[in-house]
Amino acid sequence: MNDSEIESVVKTFDWIFNFDSKFIDYVWADDPNLKEHLKSKFSGFCRLDGYGSANAVCTFFMSLTLDHKIRLAKYIIGAAEKPIVEDPGELPTSFNHELESFQ
Image (cartoon, rainbow, N blue to C red):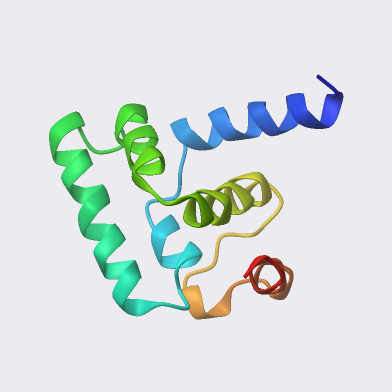
């Protein structure tokens, strides 16, 4: 395992235990219907495991399709370098570009 991979694992665990409560708004800002569906799904996992529970976050991640897992993973890895924004429509340009290049 190289240093970059180790750093990605560390960032992922840091994020799981310290995630921004609006992460779904940021990651799926371009699809309002899907965003609302995923917020409802995540809320259900939180009701079962407790809001902010690492298990709820992991269960949510594992419930996603592969393309959405990749989308969230890119956000998680980039979240440490990205500023928190109040309006998901104001995502940093580099993040929007990363999502476009993935799709």
